[in-house]
Length: 477
Image (cartoon, rainbow, N blue to C red; front, side, top):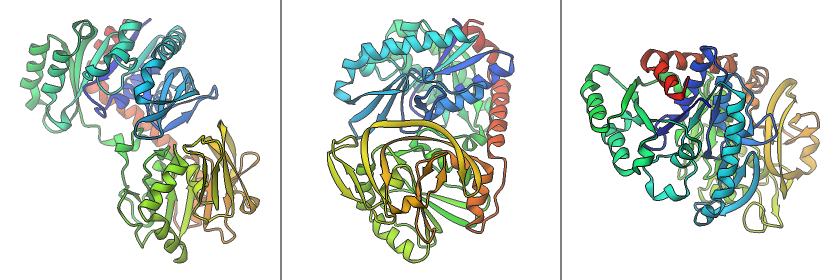
């Protein structure tokens, strides 16, 4: 079963991007290739073709492979709800809400699911490229690990370790990883690569040889900084970024449990839009034209967070000034008069007053809606997905935001406050153009085609600077 696993010396060293680039490079070589991540922790999820949910990074990697995303590509997804607890998704479906201290009790069941999913992907493709999570150097977590060496050893998959030179100390990152992990785990590592280099590559020749000499591992190359990485959907909230556009000022509130924030990536790519990702402790700017309340893993928790920042007061002033507001999924729920959670599905049981900007109310329910949809909004075709708990009703729902094919969302009488359960709608050029035209901005088409061009450029970048043939050989090809 040809496979290769990319593990990292830490979080955010570029594993997701490396796997996406290797997937596209392998596909360009004529291979049937699939991505795989045993365990992911992210509130940025995608709905799969088989009706489950996985991390957005694996959905992008599936696209790099020319495949529809499937639940098997990310069999365990942890969606943080509090600082210590998360919803546990197994093979696309929620099975538990667990505190970190209790997670180890789930390991046997989760590892069995991971190996089951990996076996199916391996049987269906020439190659599986696996992404680790965090770092194998977190040896305190090794007894319950299924994301790094716990998986690699159980499945017999060779590993290449990626270090991030941009954050500094890459020699210590790689050599230190070998020093602290178990020798049997270290034996799974076939080599290393260095990611995110800026400047003259020759200046690192001595450092590269030092790593080879100290570890005995083979080097697969030094990858220069990929400048267009920001044009691809990001998965981690640490990657949230503003745009450099000018004109219409769109302000997105960065909630504590923000989810599916890549909804706004197509807007960030518009030259006529200035997108601000507003962090906690900052007031909503007075020059904002549109305020977006994004999706969240915890509507009630983030409604309290929003109020703690004083954003409810800022929003009221923004609306009085004639500003527009768009609520996406959990943000839509917050716009209503009240959010009821009688059984505590979103946290503590009870009800909380909403922002009162739409005449609707939401009742949380145990069933989660997971569906990819196609419909119309603003007279344009929209494709997207729904991933939420709760149902929203009320007078403003008589003016739906979209039809998919049934009515979705709500719009205020004056049309300035909108809410929808749809994610991904701005990726449609026609809808994005119509939405921006209502706000006096001309749109630049071609967002989706641009993502594919960047994936091709990324694959070419890896082919130019890494020993891709050597990596495929390690995988067993």
